[in-house]
Image 1: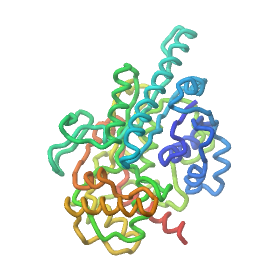
Image 2: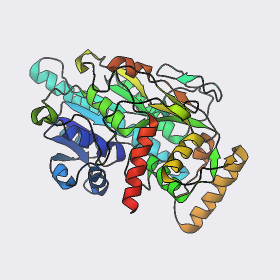
Image 3: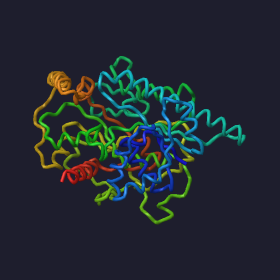
Image 4: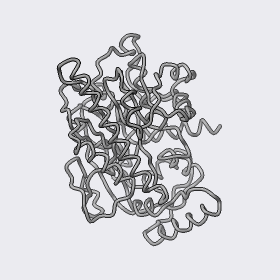
Length: 401
């Protein structure tokens, strides 16, 4: 059985839906006080009966900061998919985020090692408990300057002289924990994950802000990945060999959103946006896959479907809404003023600032990535980003009617 941590977040919700199309049951870790509202909302994008899917989740109570609860939660588990992490660019959250993300990963890794040893002692052979750790492109290395031609990959060194934000440090140090403990794991480093749900949090907030109207655009650019592509990759590398629900019932494999008529289409050319968007190459349909048993037990994959400048991303979203494109360039000086002003407004309003020093600084950098390794290993093909933006924007507009 598969156990998913971070099950009530954006990636966790879409991942569990995808897994439930292939497995009768999926285990998920949650704290006693955790709400299922976000998970129910994400399921509602796929089906009219989200509660039926929720009933098929085997909930296991635990906290990654409590190692003993994790050891207990691993009973009967073949594969752990660790999606849990605090994501924040607020100064007040920095220390807590780094500590929790790193210590949570350490506790999980030590619990897995304990469980593997227990299984080995009983069976007199190596345990098969797998770990798939979801990291981030922010844990990868650094490109030179702001080049759109340089592609960061799994082997790019990290610049020790560059100032990295708290989230980047937490994900980098979490990966280092796995290395220091010598724990075999498949590490995935996704770009900004794009998917519907949690409209006022994370990357989905970009669609909310575009709906309200955007006037400014920053200099930089980064890598993105469709949540459906990421869940498909996670499924391929999970290595759990139980018969799929789709195979047993003749259903379509892979996640499909209600009303998403393009979700099974093969990617088309980028056409007019080709100069602005770098989509990563592949020549084999998404349904092809390599056997998980042939994958290395410890390996790291960058998972980015498209590299896009921020202005071009905003333009694509506002075009979908029929809203004006942002027209005012926000350089370093303007963004420095903007984050300070928003911080002041946030304090007066009693909310977290939407723009922080860390996000303002990141908006001025161009960091592009290569996913050639995962494409070649799994014969994988990413959806074009226009397809991704179209179905997210469509669902957002539908929800506002």
